[in-house]
Length: 364
Image (cartoon, rainbow, N blue to C red; front, side, top):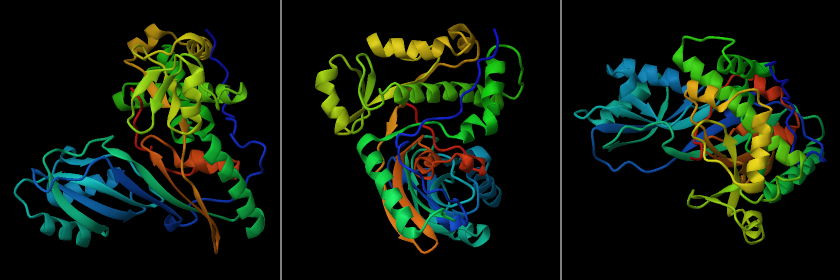
């Protein structure tokens, strides 16, 4: 079977409004990320929890540096997710150090690694990937195309649309790859045209292709005017509790959708994926039928599949800045800040900026 043609041009929810253009990450201080924990440490236990603020340091590099400094194995240093490199980011690490003084450890980390320690505590369990609610972002966009007054007006208009309709929870091009190369490699891997011995890279490339299909699904809902409504058979998620249920009666559930209490979920295809029903299943099946892969091939690659929140409902603050404009918002784990920014900037060139993958939390 020939490789399906790629369509990387994702529609905007505010397509009728002009963007503000601009540049992100002109300085690390213009892209700040603060992790929102899923729970607070209990104050006792084998693991020291240290919350730090770092500048232009990846999570992995910081993990390695902490392990080396304290004589720990890398796997004994836990974290909830990866943060952007070209940023000022605040996150928590756990350290398997049952007999050490947390305050002394904190002082050593701060003095030797050039980071700021905000607090230190203890907890019985290691901090693992996904152990967070999400992240808070404060991002300043500079080098804008228009005057500050025009830019602020445009951004405020987009913000009003986004607040009402939400933003499609696309995977960013950090996952898709420049020009979709990760997607192409993932497809070739799934269909046996390409082999990769590195297990991590193999999983990442397969995930990239499935993420692309998820983006295609979200784009199709916008194009067919189904993004702002529920379909019968949608698997919807409750924003407050995280519970997922099948939409049997659209008329009764649509008001909850419009109030932002629930949202549909999007498919990340796999051999164990929980499927939608009725009309929504037909919609999902149509995307997969054109994907060029089979469920058996996904099973061979170990791709179980899951559900992903279909739309983001960020409460976005828009404020003027002496060098541009500042957006502040929070996203659940798995959401891409660049997906929010592209809606305002109306361009995808931001994707070429080096960044790490965001913290992942798919909907099962």
